[in-house]
Structure formats: C-alpha cells, structure tokens
Amino acid sequence: EKQPRLITDSFPRRRRRGPGRPPGRLKDKKDKDKVQVKVRDHPRTPSQPPPDAALLEMLRRFDLSWEYGPCTGITRLQRWERAQELGLSPPGSIRDALLEHRDNPDVTYRWVWDGVDG
Image (tube, rainbow, N blue to C red; front, side):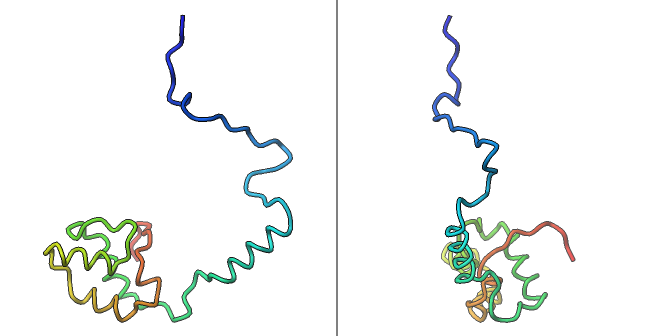
C-alpha cells in the first residue's frame, strides 16, 4: 500500500556536513580577510555619542504603542509618517527627535527590546 505524502517530500534533501568541516567555518584565509574588511567598512557603532536615556525611553514607548501600527521593516520616521497619513496623530515630539538625530541608527531604527526595564 502507498504511504501518505509528507510535506518534507516537497523539498530537496541536503547533505549533512561531514566531521571534517564544522558549520560556520570559512573555507580559506582569503575569505576570512574579505569578511574582516567588510566589517571594518560598515561599523555597527555610530560615530556620535549614544542618545540620552530619556530619548531612548520615549522612542521605546512609541515602538510599543500598537495604535500607530506595526513597526517591522521600516524606520521609526516612516512609521510616524504612516501613522500621520492615517490620521492617528502620533506625538510631534517623536518626529522632532527623529529628525534631530536622523544620522544616528540607535534613534532611527527600532531595536529588539529584551523586555527588561532598567
């Protein structure tokens, strides 16, 4: 009798990695140098000083306010402008802060919060 078809039957099988090459390892030194250059070209930390705690708290509250819609995949300013266009009246102080600190990625983008206040 024929066995029922499984969802995994629709996807190609992948070979498992052998014991000689653990996952996450680069093949050779040339690739490693490219990665280091790439990291150097795009630093994670902004060149300006970090924003003050009160500003970050205000932005965190904006991020967590579901009344202004989802915030995934867009900047905070884009979210503010979308809420304004929809007539949701987002706080003007948020827009002012975002425009003032528009070159600082800590302010521009929503970061994942760990849920710990402090």
